[in-house]
Length: 72
Image (cartoon, rainbow, N blue to C red):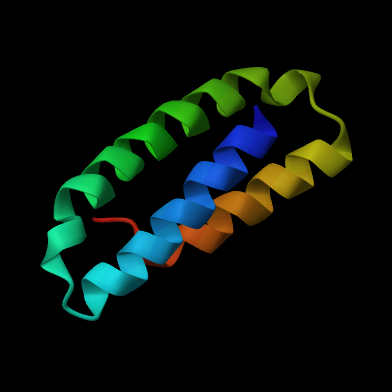
């Protein structure tokens, strides 16, 4: 699950950077990825009590990577 969330987050950041630079052709993909990230994040939060400290730290790092690009 963490690997999948990391993959979605990396793609989201890549698309967000392109969108920010003016490539509006990626708007729909951006919205889809944002939704996927929110669903994945909610799932990982439910699993958080079962995670090792290393896994929890990795999840926090993944979330931090995307936070500057999330819509408010």
